[in-house]
Length: 284
Ligand code: G3H
Ligand code: ZN
Image (cartoon, rainbow, N blue to C red; front, side, top):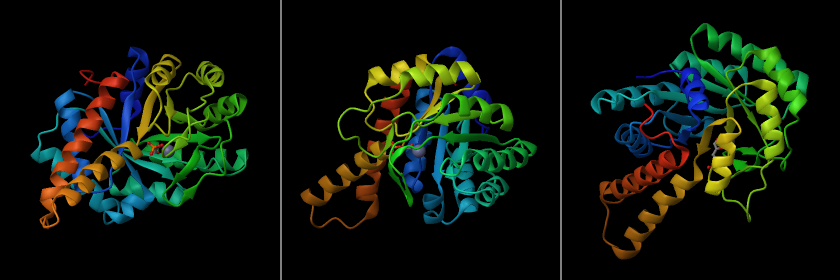
């Protein structure tokens, strides 16, 4: 069923695993992720960035595509459709009104008071419709869509505590050294702060930039209260690698199903690997 992230993440935190957010870009990504979740009996979060939402024809088209696939595939595991890095109250409202079951308001580039104000507005509207809310503090490195990171700024634990107390959000993404896209070298995650923020807020934490984080860091993050891990780039790389190989080996191919089908299979395998690594398999 389509659900918010709230119960999913509380259960994950209690039982010591993380639910993956896998970003969708088109039909094949959505098919692959839903099929992986059903096969693994895992809860799953479909992440939709503003840019990808626009690419797919808008939020309404996205919701109907997901609902249609869930019906024809008879998906029985919990699925959330989540706005990734929502840039404003207006965008979050648009997603909620279109039928998203969860939104992220990323007002982390605003001054703290402004972040609290915008996040509060989003929570009031979203919660009135049963939709869960994720907020961010600090800055994730790298780039995602047109959101360009201003370098890595670690979230401040006291600000996290205040934000949570003042806004009633459902989960928090404290930026602690993770990066969108591939890492240059090993990530340097702020585990000390992660533990402190988890203790101060009591909320499930979210780890952005899941691509390229070593398993030991994933496990440590989960043990310190991380209950949601976002992965995008790794699936994109897996899909594109397969398509590139097919094009190199077959100069005559033109039927999109001949390369998008195998790409879909590669995404599915990648997602299954993540679900096992995050411990969400067999938890639905
Ligand atoms: O919000 C989405 C992510 O944080 C994905 O990051 O592309 O590095 O896996 P990634
Ligand atoms: Zn992110």
